[in-house]
Image (cartoon, rainbow, N blue to C red; front, side, top):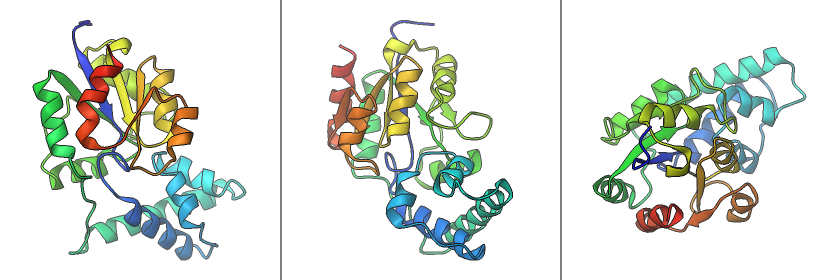
Amino acid sequence: MTASLRLAVFDVDGTLIDSQHNIVAAMTLAYQANGLPVPGPDAIRHIIGLSLPEAVSTLSPELEPERHGAITQGYKDAFFALRSRPGHTEPLFPGVLASLDRLESDGWLLGIATGKSRRGLDAMLERHGLTGRFVTRQTADGNPGKPHPAMVLRAMDEAGAEPGATVMIGDTTYDMQMGRAAGACAAGVAWGYHSTADLWTAGAQTVVETWRGMASALSSLLE
């Protein structure tokens, strides 16, 4: 590994893109398709970031595994249908592209660690013209879900970065816990789906208020 390398590993949902409406809609449809009471929007938003099976089991721990499987499949079907509609949108948060450009010009390597599937991540990156921007892309396929540190550990290994020169950036407590468990720094973002108070409690070492302040916040964290 090379000590001079700096790696910024980003969560996706709630950090890079605002996808809550589609996630809440797809989960609602999945529960309805299975004839089950629908969790409230706040409960659904709170599990964003977990892998899909973990999200469903967290929402409905009282259900048997086969019901979890049915809801998971229902979510996949619903999300694919929603994504195929002409009006589908999961916009980048304001300032994302300019901040990624700034980080790269400052010498940072960029990575991703997300609860999305590889197919879902690839579709998102292509839609926003981000394919090729990230040197490592870790998904729920083939990795334990957050907050297990495996995705960040693998990202560091692929990028050749040391834990002390790596920052995990995300909007949920799962991201903060994952980053710290991997020995990396953890930066929360204030515009996502978990409260800033929860991010601090989960181990955030800084909370970035806007994407415009991302590059300076990450550099300050490693000083």
